[in-house]
Length: 182
Image (cartoon, rainbow, N blue to C red):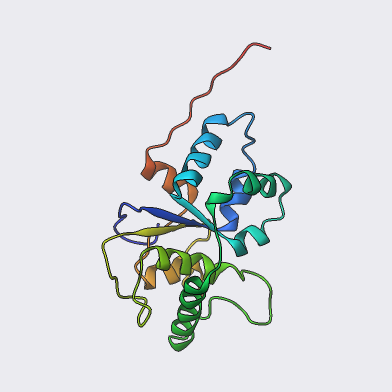
């Protein structure tokens, strides 16, 4: 966890590494988990930006996105403004989130900008809140003192950033094992 105080979040912007991890829990075995994810998609409690969908090359997820299209946040004019403003502010503060010479982590600014947009942050200064709504980011990236990454940018903008286990704990999730006779 990056933010010292976990606030109740209305929305969570999801990083691709969360999808990769969840893929290790097949829906035929972890039915309750997948029902909860589908519920969060329908309620838009979980939001996945189009660049994350593009980065995710797992066939099961691509099929799932088609069936649960409401979870995918399209890139529109307002979203582009948030991404552009975020990249400008990060550049001004010497916080390079992506490497222009690499295609790695290209969705990262979109993931954070989605959280800022859902919070309706001030487009003149994204550190300023305009209301009391909160959106967090789910990512498996860990804070690194020597590297700018999703958790460090979330901390700079006072956005909750949790890994999947901390999120499940925060939500009060638990799983039980039921063994059916073959």
